[in-house]
Amino acid sequence: MTIADAAPAISFVDIEAARVRIAGKVRRTPVLANADLDAAARARLFFKCENLQEIGAFKARGATNAVFALTDAEAALGVATHSSGNHGAAVARAAALRGVAAHVVMPRNVSAPKAAQVERLGALITLCEPTLAAREAMVAKIIAETGARLVHPYDDPLVMAGQGTAALELLEDAPDLDLVLAPVGGGGLIGGAATAVKALRPTARVIGVEPAGADDAARSFRAGRRLAGDAPATIADGLRAELSQRTFATIRAHVDDVVTVSEAGIVEAMRAIWETLKVIVEPSAAVPLAAIREGALEVAGLKVGIILTGGNVDLDHLPW
Amino acid sequence: MTIADAAPAISFVDIEAARVRIAGKVRRTPVLANADLDAAARARLFFKCENLQEIGAFKARGATNAVFALTDAEAALGVATHSSGNHGAAVARAAALRGVAAHVVMPRNVSAPKAAQVERLGALITLCEPTLAAREAMVAKIIAETGARLVHPYDDPLVMAGQGTAALELLEDAPDLDLVLAPVGGGGLIGGAATAVKALRPTARVIGVEPAGADDAARSFRAGRRLAGDAPATIADGLRAELSQRTFATIRAHVDDVVTVSEAGIVEAMRAIWETLKVIVEPSAAVPLAAIREGALEVAGLKVGIILTGGNVDLDHLPW
Image (cartoon, rainbow over all chains, first blue to last red; front, side, top):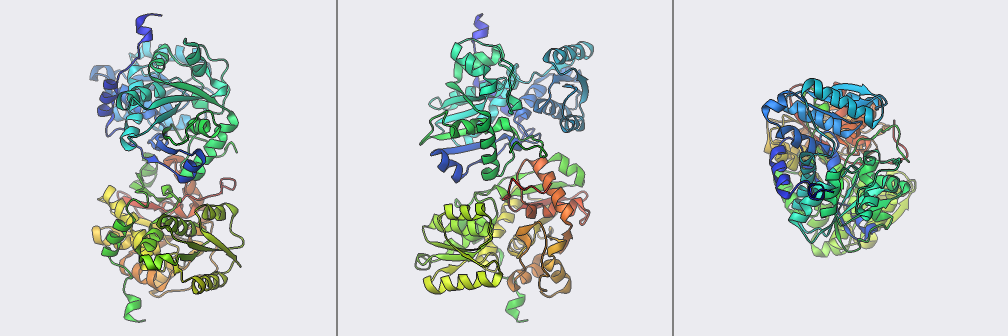
């Protein structure tokens, strides 16, 4: 491991810079609370509603920061990414706002509504085989041909810093939090959020939450070294990605723990959020509340901030 | 018709007084927008999310204003109302905040979750036969026995003024609206909202929207006199009530038109809101957007404010 590998990938100034760069381009989302959820948790819970972003997910923050950090000459060549979900829409929207081309590689089995959303946002879609290798090869080919810049879903300091602005805003609206929770997929959100929290409120703990069926971050955190994912299987499709060396180093520096939850717990928490907060969240977004309701975390008496990451679900196939 | 019957029941100062009285006791709800909804409407739409109130509906505003307007001596005797829906929860919560008793009469066939919510909020529930006459008789009996004050769901100037604060906040967040839309049930919300809009922005139009299957307000508006409801039948269960003389007079004074929408249009608009804004709305709340999407209103090029009234739905019985 080199020194560069071990250092966190971003610092708080990167998050402040991101906030300035994306101001007016992404929504300042509301923070909601509910007395019934609080009573059940014996705590005060503050939900940062990134599902209410214009594309329905926090991914708008990182993608917008990365796209608007490009020089005009760089941006003119366009941007590229691969995604079967929210990040593709985020890059497409950010590129449209900047007025440059977006190339989004999607697997052939992508859902029709997700592809339609990315297309509506003006991106050029290329379909490929549904493997990570095929997706990466196709993006590399497009970049070689066009000179477009890669906007990775999480393994990019600008993306991580952008995601961190969600926690920055959460702490502005709920300044005296004891604990901040976020789900862990590739680690861009939890890395950015922890960087923001530890700078603004060092006494607050930051805990990541993963599905037990996609627990590479929890295992890596305990092992002290990055471990590969093991055929992730979870309804929380936004959390199947693996940490990168960059996000892992940032998590090691700033995150206090990573805990896991069951599939049934995710569905129960998802429904509880729909019924009480009256907002639509996808399974991935319900994972932190599941940790509280399953008892994976002790929160009695605490003020807890929770980032609700996204709300893109198929209303014809709800999990209850 | 006497002069008192013909005059609006409230003025703008009542709404300002309500705002001060309920500050910190009800949530200042966010205003959301979505590019896809705007493109479909060829307009800019601003959604005031009263479904994100703590009890999931704007009814918190009027009930809180009425309960906190009581003198200590009056309040000590408690408050009473009848409701099968959101108003009962609103009165229960307001009474709990003030620390006084709430008596809520509910029909025997009330849904279990709704009764449980009112009970959780600390109200004393009395069940009765599911007719308006039985409900009113039971409330009258409770009031005679206890001295509790009636908090009517809409036929009360304090309740109307409280509901009007939703439009006041909407105009603060979206000051240059051309048109404000709200659903019409008993007329408390549209009456209060129109009073606020015409005071703050006289150039803006205010239009009420009703299900075609519960169109007493539309017929009354055109006839120039209050007409009875005709066996209301609509999925929008919050809109089955009839106007009172008070709300009708206020509507005549300040509302520019009342239009109607189909049942299929309500369900389509409800789903569009869930899918784009990522918030849960009940059928009643989708009625104004249905009017736009069905072409019952011409909004091209306009800035339109829409009050999303509530989000209390049974997730096991969605209408699509």
